Length: 250
Image (cartoon, rainbow, N blue to C red; front, side, top):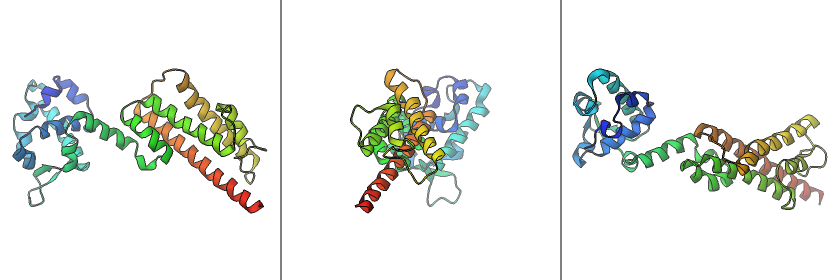
């Protein structure tokens, strides 16, 4: 059996964690119980026992229990623990298959990151090449790779040579008059704005990451990867439009 204090020795550190962060520690402790205890977890008995506060001075006892209760509720909401189906008191719980699978902190942390970036919302090309990088916490490389996919997709769709790269490539591809991916049915201001959007994204998010290490956190990486996915879907849409127009002209 593992105690919270064995994982987080300082009581102030417990209180500094959010419910989702503390939930991983609580789940690790619950999974350390023997087989029978894991299938018959009684919420009131757990919080009424010495276990939650074991190893901590009494000064923050009530606050720690309250923080752990929030973590317990988070685990229940995420489907890692659930109420016993035959229980009518709503106090008996069992660790679910998901909770058992995420017993270790590495697995749990990977799960938390995956919730920040739902794979189904990503463009397939980015999901294939970038998702695992994000889960490993390699945000810098993930962002670079995502915008590299945008660059390659634009080059391929526009029929440009491999020497066409970066901001210049975006201008040529979406140029207001002759760009092969430019939507000539849109007003001039919108065509220029779309070209600027692609050029700005490549210049801001791909180029710096290809030249140096850029420190970004998970939420920032999510925003950048979602932007790259959006841009790739625009390329897909313009490619289909160009192909359809070519077929009609023939």
